[in-house]
Length: 233
Image 1 (cartoon, rainbow, N blue to C red):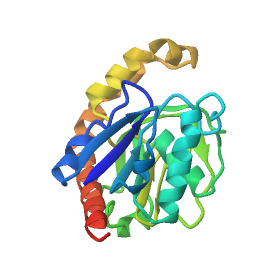
Image 2 (image 1 turned 135 degrees about the vertical axis):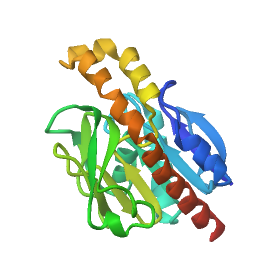
Image 3 (image 1 turned 90 degrees about the horizontal axis):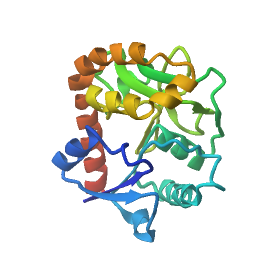
């Protein structure tokens, strides 16, 4: 089974998600800011995060190509997973507006609240009611047509959704504390320009480290969900 991964930044790979997909029987196929026609038929498509925005396809033509692939896959009910920018892309492919978030840049380590619907979800059910995750986004999206809202934060209601067999997560379940620390170092200048305190962000990393086992368990259930969907095709 192929899991095609659309990657937009060199340092934003699948993280914890990669090994759990492989353990579920997937072979990872990486695409860096590029798509192939055959990706429409892959058993799974994963769209990662990135600095660019969904509405910046004029500057980043590959986003338009990715959106086309996502729209076609949704039309044929082929599973997709979107993370951060990827979740916004999946939302846009389903007909939702994507826009700069009105409540500012959400970055760092903090909880998401799973909705009552999430407690019945085959992937999320069993997770703690409030799960500590990594956040790094400035954009948000409108409610996704026909989707089930799975998670929210105090700052943004739209944090995760299920659409058919596909899932979108605005936050980063796949990030380890070590990887988030590296992101903070790489983006230090940009974060400071946005008024963020680097030491405060780094002080949050132990909380993410403590949550890695729980987050990996959710990712395992997610990977096995996609494996079951692929087996039933």
